[in-house]
Image (cartoon, rainbow, N blue to C red; front, top):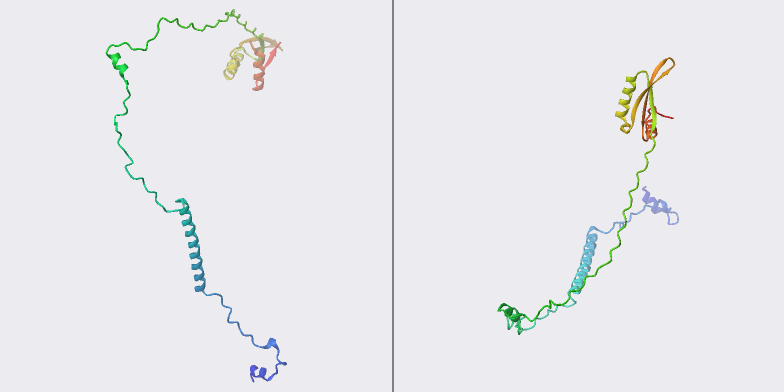
Length: 214
């Protein structure tokens, strides 16, 4: 005996609803493609109608709101003048022609009038020349010592090297002073001139040995 036959033998009150076969819903299918395409076409037509209406309305406003054509006035709009050469004024050019024939013009300048006196301004009295300011006194010279060497030739060679490296030593004059110290003779290289103390400070910044001699 099949399951369907057994279910038929049972009464309505004896049937269990969760044991009965469930029938599939045949209406679950969505709208067809044809309907979708039709709706899209209708939407495009509506949008096109709106755009066209707006365009026509804007064109009508730009043309003044009507399509009437203004008629031109009757007759020629260009008329040849009665006097193509222009209007003749009585006496025009007579003075020039009379002057060319030797007549004296009526307009004359009175050369006997006294010319106007030019406006003169009083010149200020010249100032006496101011004496030129006297030059400031030169700063007193100083003497600096650049080192002590075992020979005079070594001291002169050191001066040649320093003056070649530092151009601001050019205003100074150098000298080599022999000094006996500890049973031997040393040769001190010194330089003198204006701003020697300032030059010595610049040499110290550059890492060279230098001292001001008092």
